Image (cartoon, rainbow, N blue to C red; front, side, top):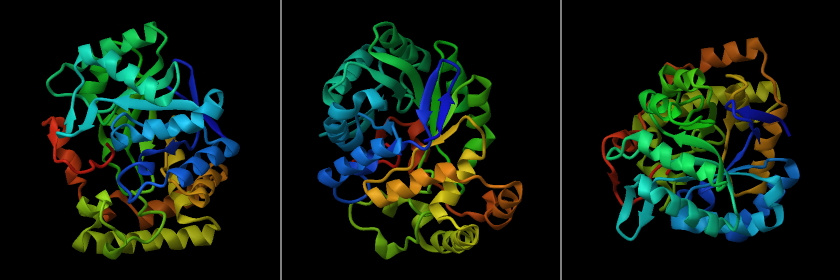
Length: 334
């Protein structure tokens, strides 16, 4: 499996990695047995950069990964996050510096490990200067509890302020062929401070991997709340995605592999973390590491699926930079 450096501090990870959120929330019922089989298969394939968070399934996801890590801890580069709290009161932000160590200790206990390879601030808490949160995270590095630091879904200014306190090895953000807004500000800022780019939802929440219609989104699937999956936006996006699928067929690869290869072609500092709980999807995504798109392929893709062709905003994210409270429903990317 291909490996990539994230940041300048020495962190190397598999590319692609594996997003684990969907094993516990957001995409229908959890299937622990199937998910564990997928995690074991991921190690066999060399997909060893695993991404979780304290909020995923209110701790369920970290406990699930612990069962696989018991057999594979030395082989896995483990990333988790804090700052989004999911409890009986709903979903809210808490990145107060005095709480950081406790959140880390709780994640370590759930994961059954003595260190976290990459620890992210999941969201910046608007009540707390980001410098104070990152300062508390840096103390975890000094204690040996954490090896590298990251930040997720920040803006460019927050990232620069964070990096002034401690090296940031990775910035996690939604980035895919159908969601490219971070290219305007956060991605250039990450490169300016020497941070790698970890792309979640690199398959457009599955939309770039397979046709998704309104009837395909069951109760509990958070995509039902995403404007890109609604009405005219869905119709427009489906037409563009169909063109992408035709190009993938012509190239002899799957649409998912085309979407992942497009992302990795954006730079050697980019690592997609497609999520799945199914072994065939995992194997398909892992095979994308062997796909190289030519300049002509990329030009054709830009012609049929330019940024302006996609419709709909990810409205559910819009409030997270200005409000610390969300409705008690799964938050996309949370």
